[in-house]
Image (cartoon, rainbow, N blue to C red):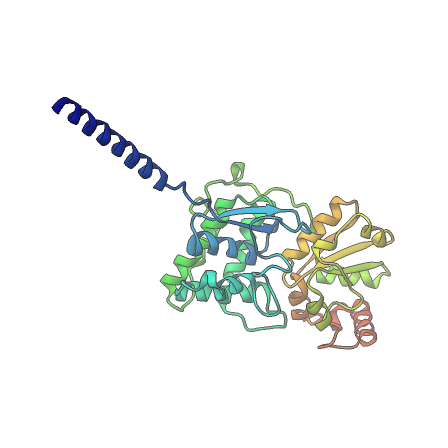
Amino acid sequence: MLGSAWGRIGITFALASAAFAAAAVSTVRPPEPAPVYVTWEGIGPDKWASIWLLRRHIDPQAEIHFVDPGVMPDDGTAFDIPGSDYMRAGPITTFEALLASDLGSGIDSPDVARMAEIINEMEVSRWHITASSNTGLVERGFRNLQFRFDRDAVPFSCYMSFFDNLETLIDRADGGPVDPSILDTGDRLCEHLPENGKTQSQTVQEMQARTVLETLGKGANIVFVDTRERAEFDEFHIPGAVHMPLREVSAERMAQFADADLVIPYCVKDFRGFEVARAMSSLGVQNVAIMNPYGIRGWRNVGLPVAGDLAMSQPDAMAALSSCASNPDGCLQ
C-alpha cells in the first residue's frame, strides 16, 4: 500500500512538473519584430536627418527600407513620401513632422530642436533669408560628404556619423557658432572613404548661373524643370519652368525635352534637382545640368526673376529673364 501511494505521488508530481514546464514554455514569447520605416531613395538632408532621428532618438531598432521614387510601399511606416503621415508639407520638413508626431513626443532635446531649425533653413526656406552661419557650415559639410562619394553613393553609416557629429557640435556650441572642422569628410567622420580619398566623377554637370544666362542669351533652348511640389511651384518658379517632381519622371515624359539644348532641373537647394537630373540623364536626355548657386534660392539670391502667385506675372517675368540673358551684368548681384 505504501509503495503504491508513493508511486501515485511520484506520478502526480511528474505530471505537475511537466504541466509547469509546458506553461513556462508557453509564456516565453518570441521577440517583437523590429519596426520598419520605408522611404524613397534620395540624397536630401531632410531625408537623412529624418533617418538619423528615427534610429538615434525614436527607435534604435528601427529598420530603414528604401524603394524607388514613385513606388508606394505596401508594408512598413512610410515617411518622406508624398501622402504619408510623416512628410514635408509647406514650411514643415519631414524631420519636424516626425518631431511633432506621437513618434517624437518623448524627445525633449534642445540640440535636436536646433538641428530641426538648421534642416529647415537648408531645405525648405525659399526666399532670401538671413540663415545662421551654422546652417551654411552644415550645408557645406553635407555637400562635401556627398561630393566625395559621387553624391548618391554615401554609405548609410557615414550619414549617421555626420548627424551624430552635428548633434555633438550643437551641444558644445551652446547656441554659438559650431566648429566646422569635424563636419569635413576626413577619417573622423566616415570610415568608408573612397580609395586614396579621391572625389569620384560627377554624374551630373554643374553650370554657373552666369553661364546659363549667357547660353540663353545666345538663343539656346533652355528648359527649366521645377522638381518641387505643386504648391511650391505655384508660389514662384523660374519663368517658363516645367513642373515635374521626381515621382513623375518617366520615359514617356522625356519626349518633351527632345528639342532642348539644355535642361536645368532645380528645387530649393538642388538636392531633389540633382536626383531629377540624374534620372533624366539615365532616360537618355542630353545636356542635363544643375545650377550653382543651387536651386531657386540661389537663383533669387543672385537677383534673377521668378514668376508665380507670390511673384511677377509670367509675361513680366519672362521679359525680365530675357533682359537678364541679354545683359547678365545688369542683373546678377
